[in-house]
Amino acid sequence: MADIVAPCSCSSAASSSASAQFARSWWSFSLNLGGSCIASSKRRRNSGNVGFVIRASASSHDASTSTAASSSNSAKESGRLSLNGNSSYATRALEWVTGTALDFRGATDPLIPTPLAAGKRFFLVRHGLSSWNEEGRIQGSSDKSVLTEIGVSQAQRCKHALSKIKFDKCYASPISRAKSSAEIMWSGREEPLIFLESLGEANLLFLEGMKNQDARQEFPELFKAWREDPRNFNVNGVYPVVNLWGRAKKAWAEMLAGSGQTVLVVTHKSILRALICTALGLEPERFRAIDINNSGISSFTVNKLGEPMLDSLNLTAHLHADDVFY
Image (tube, rainbow, N blue to C red; front, top):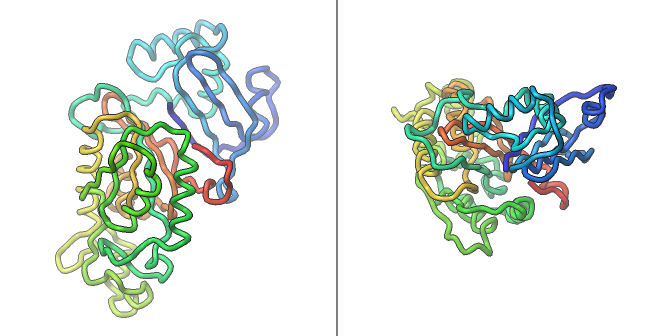
């Protein structure tokens, strides 16, 4: 199943029967490729932000035009995600929202040198609110920060929001705030948690444990580099953000080499930024181009060639409502 979440601005409804059904507002399309195509005008909210969600699994709808059939057949022949059967309505709906993004071969560089036996889906989750988050302290790789009561509740909400997804594996950072979050989200499942050192947080050395305001006052140049020049930020000759990029690539390789097609990943903000940026081909200079809230959920689809496509970024609606499922 592939979810794509993208912001979209819809105005007046079009006159054609196909577009009139999805141009009025924000739509949640469920493409059940193999049986039917269902469109519903279900609004999705994310702290005031609304996103488009397309859900694809494997099937068909009604007869289509020769153009849609040709597009579908071409997708099948290339081994990419295809509409099995001919659905002109489904195809136009998808193209209207994604710009034909379902066919994403070559859009990004492969994360691995050899093809996969099958594509994979990754859900990347940041740990719940921690004690040092509350206190405004720099955490880094320190293991002294633990989940708060709110953080535990957030992890439970993540578990609930992801409960309809059949996960095969869960990888997590061994650092306690992420480990505890993963244990909550993965509870009740037989498959054991897998802890990867490569998913640990950035090592910020003597800055760890300091309050942000104190670090800014005591080490103004260092703190400025951390905030404004991540590639060149270094602590006693150690380049934390550059090192993150190396670990993120290693983590992707480790997770893609594992079995299972649907994977949960629970870790920290900085390594999540690195995982997302490396998947999209962004360099360490873009470290702060992405923000991830506590218990925010992002997802990627990786095709057989190992090429990733970002499906959703920093979803947080589940933290504010009980009826949100991904």
